[in-house]
Amino acid sequence: MKNILSALLLISLSSLSYAGGHAMSSEKSSSGVHFYGKLYVGYDDTSTGKAADIEKLDDGGGKSRLGLKMTESLGNGLQLIGNLEYKFDPVDGTQNDSGTCTSVSESTSCRTFNLHVGNLGVKTAMGYIGVGTYESPYKTMGKFDNNMDTAVAMNAHGATSTGSGGQAGTLESMLAYHGHMGPFEIGYMYALSDTDASASSDRTNTDQGDYALGIQIKDMMMPGLTVGYARTHDHEVSGASAQSNDRVFASMKVLPHVGIFLSMEDVNQSGSYSAGITSAGDITTIGTHYQLGHTAIQAVYAKGDSDGAATEDYKTLGMSASMHLSKTSDITFGYIKQDFDSTGSDITTRSIGLTHKF
Image: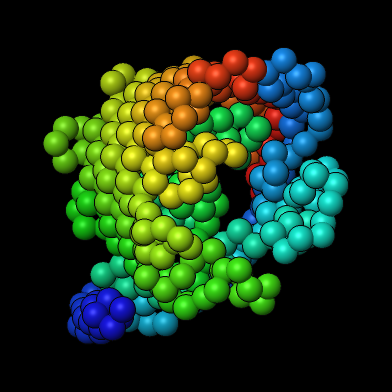
């Protein structure tokens, strides 16, 4: 931990020296506060096995957002940057659809507003350094899902990993670094707090020693090609050894309006393989994006191989079309099915959703 802090301090001091001695000192960085948000409401039809369909007007579990972004020029090319973003459900005012709000684990999802990200840091010539709650590089790098914040999201149907250690949620109490070096993009996060996640007064979802990292390379080997690697690591798991999720990914723009992508995940953190399943496993995902005028079309196929029971293996197929109604509003039609090898466990979702950003 001391070595990590020393390295980041060295980067900060080097950045201060670099910024103070170069032309960046004459640049004018804007300062101010920016208010933004997103409203999402969808009508969903979900069926599980042979059970009756569940139809509901929903926001997909806190997919709507309200946020503030703050920037302040510190001079010499340095900027103080802050971000505070809350998620909420405009349909019924709570993110918990179970109807109960009694346990510790349910208390946060029963709030009208729940923290999504909140952080404060400094942008330097060598990159950004900050502390707080962030989306991890495992989620943000190689983020291929156009429907991440809808009812037909890939991470809700096994087409990618789920949970805070996978491609969903955020990591709390993190020291974060993010920078660009030519075609390279690098992100690293380290958990600062020594916590007891079971204590009602101490519920951060990370513990000191946990980390997340990611690196991706764009347009270096050939134009339009992006490749990368990401990892999240839980260093201390109750009753078990350390657990990591690892992911390699690639995307390629093959035609002016057509792209393809590939993601391969080795998922070992409990709850990351698929919703409701604690086993580890591998997830392989392929897909394509096609821009047809004002409509973005996405098709995806994924295969999950569980390290547990054979009945936890599955295949996922999804298709969607998102039409731009204006510069700030979209309507999305989607279908996605997670087909388990076990009989009667298939999950199928059909959805139409409206998104407005401001």
